[in-house]
Length: 256
Length: 213
Ligand SMILES: Nc1ncnc2c1ncn2[C@@H]1O[C@H](COP(=O)(O)OP(=O)(O)OP(=O)(O)O)[C@@H](O)[C@H]1O
Ligand SMILES: [Mg+2]
Image (cartoon, rainbow over all chains, first blue to last red; front, side, top):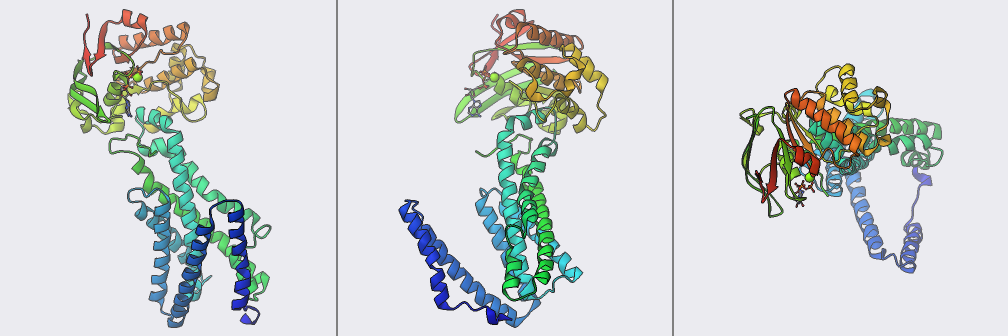
């Protein structure tokens, strides 16, 4: 099956011309990005190489606990990333972690229980990576949307508080909008899946010589998974963190 | 005393806005507060409404410290009409139903219509979008919103500023009615006429409320 999948070192070097092109554009257009491009490419090469060997080792050992540990590391990384990118709010890491952890384990747990995927490293680790990263992106969107809305609607929220609303009552509309914003890209991409983008999972399977009709089933499963993970992740993250916009005495404190 | 401020200090960015402010308001009083822009009048009302926390001193409501009340229940009793209200949601109805929604009560349409009439707005105004209202209409809807749950104390921050003469008289008449009905009113204003007509007038000066007669 893998006979038609050979990437020689030479072909990698040829493909690297793409990077040279990007640096060329950066130089010509004075974007000042070449350092960043080189750094990110170097990081990608190192990270992927390490991960490649780690995966090889984990697949070889085929131990469930090791597989779960690796999945947990992926989730921790996603949480850290989300925390770093979203203004490092107080307890932000734990909120992100809980949201990504719960949404990912729930979604994948469902698939394992239903027998759609087997709890082996070859299936669990890549799926965890995909689900956790989508959950991470959705949470990031939710956090950002929530912050902008509290900034834009500061006075409206204060007017509700002045009438004696609780933080939850004064935030209802904002929470709803933030969750909607977080889910929208997943819903939109589900609409165009296959028509515009052939998703990574499906392409990978077809690349590896799997019957496209069979690959489709997996992709449909992925669509369900991502909908579940992004909705669950953003709901958990939003409900855990909105209260930190208010003081103990229900005064709205919007970070600038 | 229904509401009392004791040795109230408020500092922000190292600036002393209120300093050793003392004030006792008796139940049923209609107090007018005047004073130059930036003297701390809104700050004082925000402290009374629990939107700011004093740097020192205490606020008591019905003989108990403000902190001893759950803040939503406190704010339903000590109702703050914010300076230049924007209104929230989409329609006037969203605003007028809100006090009932947060206290789990059925919407009292009769009371809404009664108060709308008192501020000279027709009942059909509940359907209006909040962006379709004039500044004066918005201010009147906001006032109705604060009155629906019958608060004990009304904190009014320049509720007549920017209103035309007719709207102003309507608002002042409503406030007088609520005063007659036994509510306690604390009103901040720049309006010369209102200051002239005030029964109980205090000036904000040097971070304190003083009697200038
Ligand atoms: N969040 C804040 N940060 C810094 N300074 C503030 C803040 N809020 C108010 N101030 C300052 O406190 C002072 C008092 O403000 P306040 O709004 O209480 O004045 P005011 O008497 O209501 O004035 P006006 O009649 O113009 O409404 C002002 O000098 C203002 O600049
Ligand atoms: Mg003011």
